[in-house]
Length: 359
View (cartoon, rainbow, N blue to C red):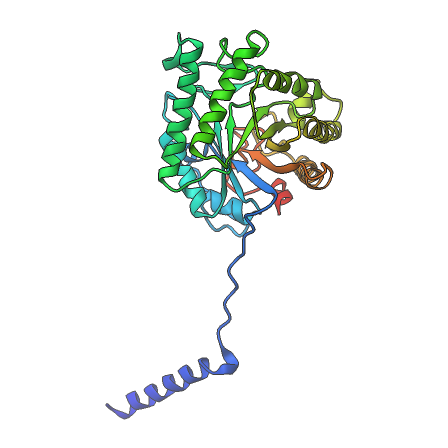
């Protein structure tokens, strides 16, 4: 070894010793700690795999590309909600697709809610289409179909060691589901019987899982009394009441005079129905205005108002419902303004200020 190499070796050794001295140790940031317990702060991200297939990407505030569920966890969320369709035309939200998303949520330590629509497509207060394969079935046959479908999906989750904390039997079943057989205003007893079939199927696979009945218009106490009395008076059971709370739509449909009043009436309804039916309640769907009429990102003032409203919903659900409201879920927050008006992300895939309400 020549003199030059000996000198360089000595220099590098000195640098290494200096760098490793006790007075100059490298400092690494503490890994984040996520609270996955207690009050549920969640998101329905059922569109996620379809969006990813189409090329959607998501970024944190520093511009770092981040997997969507992990990003939601970093934003303060601890729970994921996933809808299930029986035999959707394009395959999204079928059993296999739900398993993929539920597995990802589980691996992030997030809690899972499964939302059975009992339809091949969207089920909501305006439509509750019976799955094509179930058309023409008798009531008893339809009850069996409900039970078999429910157990099939839940057993598939169980095989992957995924235990949903909550399961919805139907989505926004304000006038029942599986029309016309289970339409509440025409066949109330049949609605209750079909709901009971779903409830018992859930309990047969996951006895400790919380089963929800989910209605829309969380501020409408009359609706909840009417629907839940049908179930109760016909022998159906549930563990928790799920509500949809959308100030934007309540205003658009002329149901309320202000967004603030929608929230006030919903909180009042939570206290009334939790007392009357002696059960907990959860806001399983909400959303704030994030896009304008042209599908562009809403003005900063509109986004700030959305954060204010959402913060109020979360705070009042936690502090002003006698402990009966157990969580708030935002419906598809990751959606782009051009695709859905009440998302909470930008077109480029960044969270807006609305999401700060969950921190």
